[in-house]
Image (tube, rainbow, N blue to C red):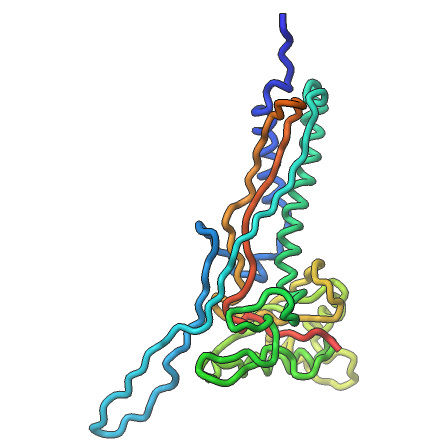
Length: 304
């Protein structure tokens, strides 16, 4: 009589693996929704288009006709999704001991899900790690994310980088907030963009907390209020351990459709029983992209 072992039922193992993977993936903390607008995608790529508006209203003289104008398409940004995967194998011999196999598969699955989640976090953080360099991804205007000369659809240029590179301080934050209040649209007209969060590497966490939460001015004997705290100018602090520059920092804004994360394929688990080795192969795969349509979603500095 032939023996039946758990190794002959990889589907049973896969069902348990998928449940563990789903639970682990949901439980893993993510910073991405705080930094990016997340959209689902059903295509190999997505496109974002900047629009150049019609400009300000025109004074109409008595009896004169209304001045008509329209909007036109500006810079085009294409998001090409990339696929990321990882897998592990459990031998036939291991599967024959169901208790050990389940334990090992649980550990392997949780590690694989963690690494897949970390991969996505790092790729998202790289948008900021590479924000000042044109050697990597550029926007629809052909510029890096944070530069001093973004071309405008209506002519001229605009900046989203602190004019004088500086370390994190009360003065540098206040200047960035002033710069945000002066951000212009594609027609070089000031557009209402509001600060949303301060994004920093782990090394600046304590200094940033003092700057945002102290009631009085930091490192000053003056009896002045902390204006940033008093005005609620920066509602949230985001500490991202995957930021690699220890003194670069960013203020995110509420600019619409700016920093984007498209999810083409969510995390999918699969299993295969290898004919030659009889090993059970378990894999994880997902597809996504990161980028930006409108640079106005962030102002930053690489630090002094």
